Length: 346
Image 1 (cartoon, one colour):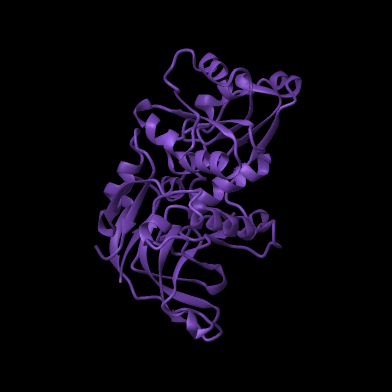
Image 2 (cartoon, helix red, strand yellow):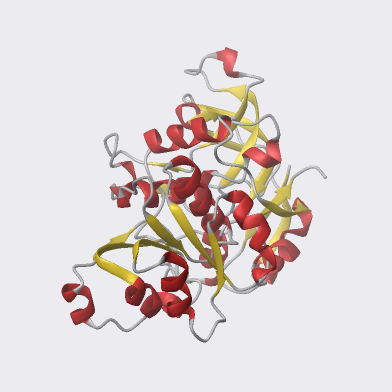
C-alpha cells in the first residue's frame, strides 16, 4: 500500500511517500480501507516537534518513534476483521474514534496511557489502517469526505462546549472561527446548545458563511478596537470564550469576559506562551479550562448531532494522498474556511 510517513522532526521534506505492507488486524482489530483523512494541527506540530524535542514530541511521555504514518481524522470501509471481531463488520463504512485509553468511561482522555492514532499508532495518511473494532463508529453522513472532518476537531470542540456547560441564550466568543475546531465551535455552541456566538476571524469575507453556520456576529481580530467591537456587538461583557489561538487574543478575551466568565483553550496557533495578570483572573472570578479531545460518549453525541443536521461539514479543499506535503503547507496558510482532506487512491 502507499503511505505517507514522517521520518523525523523538521519541515515538510520529512514527509515521504513509501510502499508498505498492508497491516494485519490483531484479534480485536479491523482492517480499514481509508477513503478520506482530514488534516489537523496535531500531526503538523508532531512533525515540527512542537510538543517537545528529540524523543519527546507526542501524546505519550516517551514521544514519537519514527518513521510514523500520521493522520487521525479517518473514514473508510472495513475490509477484514480480526479473529475476535464479528465478521459481519466487514463492508461497514466507519469513522474512527482517534485514541485508545484504559481510562474509565467519561475520563478516557485523562488517562496516562492515552495513545493517539497518527502519533503512537500509524494513522490515516495511508491506503489502509488497522484499529480496534470497538473504536469504529458508523459514519454519520453518507459521504466519506464529509464524515472525515469531525473526529479530532469535532470531539475537541464538543468537549470544550460541554466543559463550559454553555446554556441557551448565553454569549460565546469563538476565536479562530474559520478553522477546523473554530468553525465547529461556532456550530456546536449555536446550533446544538443555543448560544449567541461572536466569531473572531482575520478575513471578514467569510462573514456570510459563518453566519450560515450559526454565528450572530463576525468580527476581525485585525481591528484596532477589537475589545470595544466585541462589547458593542454583545451589548456588554460575554459569558464564555472558546479559544484556539492562544497568546494573540488572550488579553482581549479576559478583557471582554464578564465577572464569573469562563475561558476554555484548546490550541495556541497565535502563540504558545502569554502573560497573565493574576489580578484579572481572581478579581473577575474567571474560570479557566484546558481542553483537548473528549470521551466516547461525547463522540457518540456529536455523531448524533451531525446525523441530525445540526452540525455540518465545512471543507476548504481536498488533496490526493501523494500531495501530503502540499496539503500540510496549504493547511498553514491564513484565510481558509474549514478542513483540508487527503484522499488516498486518487
